[in-house]
Length: 205
Picture (spheres, helix red, strand yellow):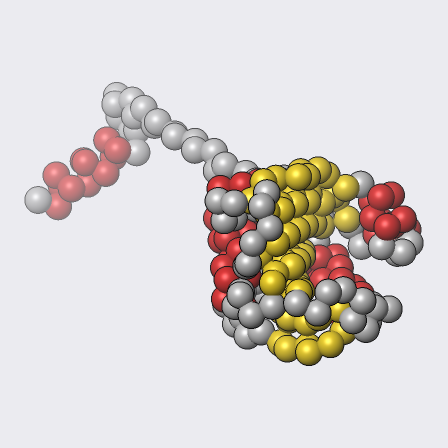
């Protein structure tokens, strides 16, 4: 038995007159999708009475100009691009009236983290005074998150704004919803945010 086992090992090793053919199978792991457009909200994600009014990329130059942040800072922190989709009701009723989401991609987690805190700061310290501010709990959303509802003092008193900002890996997401006060709950808004977050997780897997 011992001799038979030794012979078998020698044959497998390619000794003697036996030639062993080795087959190496190389499998390529698909690269995760890094295009932020793949993660943004789609028309099929929002209520049926909505229409899509915008779907576009934003360059760093555009963001620097519209959000009053230096272009050099965006480049220094590794901003790649961002993608925005906007939806509005085609007939104004109760509930959500407008939905706007932006998914921004960064080269590093630290860059996305910097941008997350920048956007949170700009929302909390915007020059327009906020009334009836309430924070929403969203413990499973992203790796960092801030979610709140409020009313802007310069808009109609029957409207409520919702803002959800979160980071997942090298992506920062901003979701804004305008709704008729009392007709939409925080969970309705967080559901939309989780749709984006689920796509981010699937795209990075």
